[in-house]
Length: 379
Image 1 (cartoon, rainbow, N blue to C red):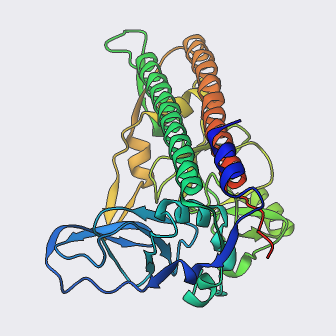
Image 2 (image 1 turned 180 degrees about the horizontal axis):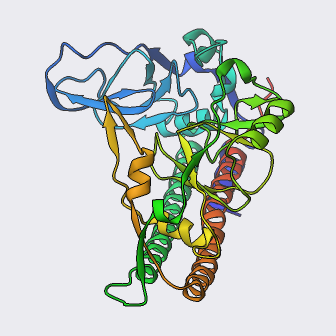
């Protein structure tokens, strides 16, 4: 029997009393801080620490509860702090309840489900004050907090280790990719501009009125490039433009010319349409340069961009003048084969490690919720 089981068996074998949140703490509103001088006291908003000032709103352990915005993010603070008006803070009656116990319990209740707004997510004091909370004896609370603190620390350490492993593998991949694509003064390597390899192409412009939020063919704009589409065009318009105007071939490498410059997507041949000038491609002859070789070259290309006002763009001229090394086809094939294998290994890690992190987080939440489940004592 664990220490927690022993404490429960000794102190509350028949269950525990439940109280409304308002009976164990007081919820306070945050305030504006802009009139206060800078300092070392953290100012919290619903997204975390905003800045630092030289006054505090409260200096005892507190659970910070978002009032608006990211209402699923709770904070536990033990040092002096200030909160803005998008974040409640709590004055907790520590004679009857441990502040960290309140924090873990409210986390387990997923209070974002209590959202009272149709637009920006919001919570009110009225709703929060009515949340029922178990009140086991203090020794039981303290043991639960100790267990969850340890579990939280272990989960954080594992997440940090897995994230570091993922970063290291990505850097290793980039190192070997750049090494394979750096040829120095090799006389067998021809340097060519992308304009010599093929013309820069783009789809014909689609007007906003020609799109809809649902439809036959996905229309990718710069904001949805490489992601899920949020606009569509008709099958008829797609068929008409694909036949009459420039359109990528299966395997062509699409490049983002705005937003995050130089992102690439390999066109898979499925029906899709792409925003003109913002998403472009080189219509290259694969008997000279492999598409997949271009793909890897683009990944390490320091694009020269032009700035118009505040918007950085990759114009056709920038693309056409960019130079890349072009080895014989056999060497291109060898390089692509090596990088494909390395890319597959890295992608396995990229998907596997976040999945492992998510699994550990779910495991933590399961045990947290189990520890914080109590039978209510009957009168």
